[in-house]
Image (cartoon, rainbow, N blue to C red):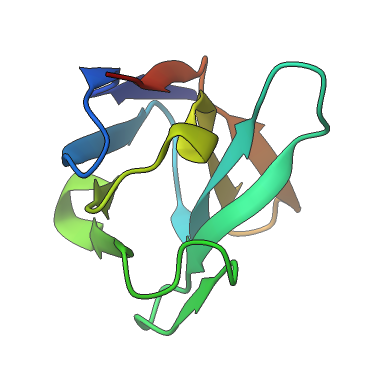
Length: 120
């Protein structure tokens, strides 16, 4: 199983970016998917998660600015980021909680990370 993230880049404060992350490989079912981020010198933190049924959860710091969504047919999760601030600068990692077979256990998989830099 691989998670391929894309969409990062350099953006000015107040700007927008859309991150995508597609899961591929031998997948039976994907439960929750999410985005986490890690700023230089800081621990990785949760940004947003979305359950298979569509319920969402956001960090307080991004509520009202970021929107997480998913396309179950494409095994893809998105993060629309609006009103970006310099403190949003970080490497963003996608995550998927999935099963590879009907009898297999659930496991977390991580993407390679995509850098988001918010600067003027």
